[in-house]
Length: 257
Image 1 (cartoon, helix red, strand yellow):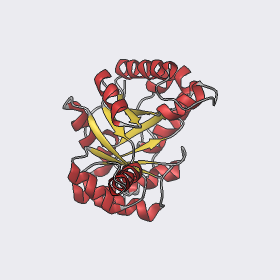
Image 2 (cartoon, one colour; image 1 turned 30 degrees about the vertical axis):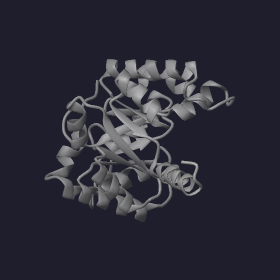
Image 3 (cartoon, one colour; image 1 turned 60 degrees about the vertical axis):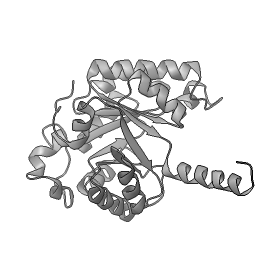
């Protein structure tokens, strides 16, 4: 069970008991944050692993999230204390870290997210301090440490990972799970072994009191995961939404639709 269980807008939304819409943003565009906030996103994820843009774009997106009244997570590119601290200091409500495969990975990640005594985060919340009075004392219960579970190795270490004090949330990556579980043979997120792995992960999250989040490629997949009880659900990315909307418009012009 996590040492810090209270505080913060994301936890408050989860506690309401309804599935949350996590708008996953990869273009580094602040205006996109404002648009999804207007559309009713419960939270946003600013992707700095497989997304476009660097620190300046992240800062713009976090500022837009504040303006839009929506909490923001940042996915960093690697389990690095400098990148994690920079995102949190800039005002991210939490960090998503890829490739958490072992309890040691989880402990290192949490150590970068949380202040002592739970972690070793350095003090310097230049923008984050604007979010609340006495940020230092409140931050450990307010910030979200979210590790991604994406590999066969991680599935074999779930109890150790999920029992890490301070690990607040996991994000399941079905695409990478499909790749690793098939030995690179396919990326079918609906394959039986992938669904079985996701069911196990969801059950373990409930057992350990960790918030469950999942990236869904499409609406049908998202609906099936919501029915199973996943708490935070992403449906594709804004880049995909733009591409699909443009293709639909092209079909209208061509008289196909």
